[in-house]
Structure formats: structure tokens, C-alpha cells
Length: 261
Image (tube, rainbow, N blue to C red; front, side, top):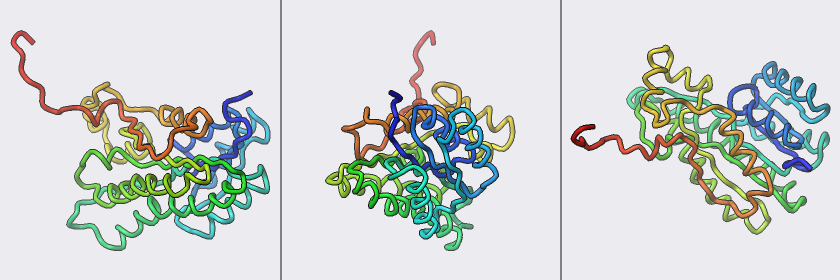
């Protein structure tokens, strides 16, 4: 039996990057996957390729996570196609580079609506079905920004900090329903977001050079952790904030000089 047989998973932001890797891996491991994205062309391509390898194992849906009504529709369509949703991967998010003095309330609210409210609304939408099913795993995707300060990312950091915090609150509130809630805080993973943050080859090389492992993470690295948290192997794991960053968050930054080295 595959590790995720019998699981029905929603993966948001599945049209590219981490979300795509997560959707593909969950399907490979036996889950039925509802892959959603604001870019329907991208997510349809991903789902077509999944279904070509594993017929009738995935469904593509157009989805703006900041719209509460769309969450209701996604959960209903998932249930109609595959049955009760037992796994939610709140992966969708947007990046924001802006200095603190130019950040407007409108931009702040937009980032918070997509990155924080979009995940919270997802939790609200799936919990009734998970309650009936008697089991659930909710996996929220935050960011290393919640533990490592970085300039020009105030709104983004605040939104991901909210995700990290309400994941712990939800874990306690939902524990009695046998619903587990965990948060993944990735470091520098090579996606389009990273390419936006470091737009030139020189920028990318410099960013890679300061990583303890001297390389970026891959989307599949995060997907492997998602698969663990989606599976029954993580039966006793809830309320965790798990950093996956190649050691960047524990890099001391200043090294003593030792004679001969």
C-alpha cells in the first residue's frame, strides 16, 4: 500500500514551484490531489501530467485563496470528485519587496489577505469535512522570514508570521477533533519567488554563497516534508513549526580567527 493511499489532499498554488512539487509527490505516493491555482493554465498542465502517469488521481481548479466563497466551492468539488478532504496544504502565497517607508495600507492588506487570511479561510473550509471523517492534517507554509530578520520584506514577514502563529493556535483548538496542524518555514528554495528576490545571475550566486550548504533548496525538498506531515507517520506531530533551510537559521555569522586556519 502506498504511503498516502486513501488520503484526499488540496494543494494550493500548485501551478508551479513548491506547490507543483507537492502535488506531484502526493499523487505519486497514492493520494488523490485537488491542485488549485490562480493560473488555471499552469495548474491544468500539472494535473494533466499527473493524470497521464496516474489516471484519475488529480483535479485542477481555478482558485483565489483570498476569496472565502471560492474555498467553499473548492472543498465541495473535491468532495464530489474524491470524497472528504483529509489533507490541506496551504502553499499559495505571494512575495513582496518594498521598503518600510513606501509600504501602503492597501499593499499591506493585499499581502495579508493572500498569505495569511487565504490560509486561515482554507482551514475554516476543510475542518467540517475533517470532523466528519474523524481525521485531518493541515500543513501551512510559512517562511524562514518569521525567524530570520530581513529588510524590505515587512508585509511579507508579517503575513508569514501570522501563519506561523495561528498554526499553533489551530493545532490546540483542533486537536480534540484528531486534526493535526503544522507549519513549514522554508529557507531559500529555488523557485520563481527566489528569482524575483535575486534577479541577476550575480545576485543568485551571492545568495547561494552565504548558504551553509552553498546551494539553494529544491521544491521537492519541501515536498518530502509535506508528504511526511500528510502521512500517518506524523501521527503524533502537531503544533510544530519546522524550519527547512539548509542550516541558514543557525549560521552564527561571525567566526573566530584560529591560528593556521
